[in-house]
Image 1 (cartoon, helix red, strand yellow):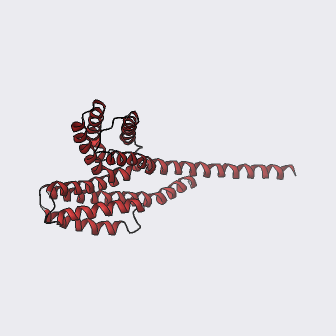
Image 2: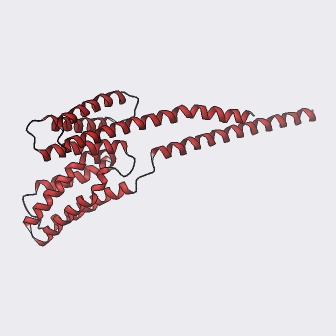
Image 3: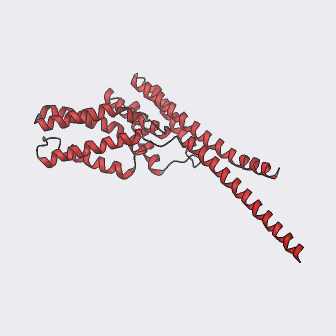
Length: 263
């Protein structure tokens, strides 16, 4: 009976925490929906509606991330910068349509990365990103400057789209190494890579990029599943500890009675 009461108490303790985690997930999903709606408005050139949605997003974001929902300072900055760019895209009277769409797309991908534990939207661009990079590398190997620059520009454009959201999901040091290679490649974009060292650097960048996409595909289980595992494991450990303590106490009492009988 006492063990049953003990287990019930453990459940009651863990239940509010699981409810809190579920509420946090719902809050983030709400932000994700707002960001998608704003993206659709810009895509359809309904800029005033997009501005209203982005203002609403800002209000909700400030309320949710007042210390009750876990978020790092880096993530906060990434969201804020991408949100400001999206608001600029919706409000600007002169910005070209494609630039507007690029800015709001970056924002959309960032919020999706923040709210998604696996298969983020930015990772679905793997074929396009790696395809453009591979074609640029092949053009460099064949000595075709026009084709190289066309595919390089395509690759860099897509990389800029996904880079902010990659910062949410990819380990910082790993992404910094890749980004350093991309920036180096960008600086030398006016010339065609010809030397063995330059071509090897292209190979290294391609491998590093592929490692990032592969890492996302092999990402760990959903945090909600880990919560169940951790909660269940904690209850089992505490239960075993309690049972062990009861057994130890019982053995002590038996030993005490035996000594009393001998005396």
